[in-house]
Image (cartoon, rainbow, N blue to C red; front, side, top):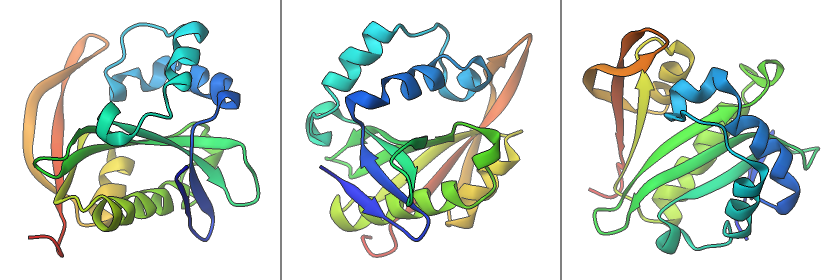
Length: 178
């Protein structure tokens, strides 16, 4: 089991007890636009996902970890590696802090730092990337704070309500693995 600990948060593998938390995030329509979700998920499907969450990143090509405050085992967010490509040593990163009262308190920042270190030191990845809507200033600030650079804008990429919005592609090259 993976456990990554910082000063204020730790990242842990998903557990069956996280069913309701993951269900709430996956069915929160306010964040669907960031995750390209279009339909609700049932508890049945999420339970099946959690039963298979033990799969190795090399097998599943993704890794989802719960973000927890150091003094609590309750998840406050999720951080994901997706599109894991071991041949080219890269993966995408996504992060969500569920409740507004937990945002802008450093939880996302420390979680991203822990994940970047894990990816570059343990997985020996060459690069990470993130897809961020150009209007999502908090996420842009979070990722650029760690050296992610916008390498391109995908015009009219996401349909949000009745209009199209651009999405930036942000990339971080491992400075020790060139």
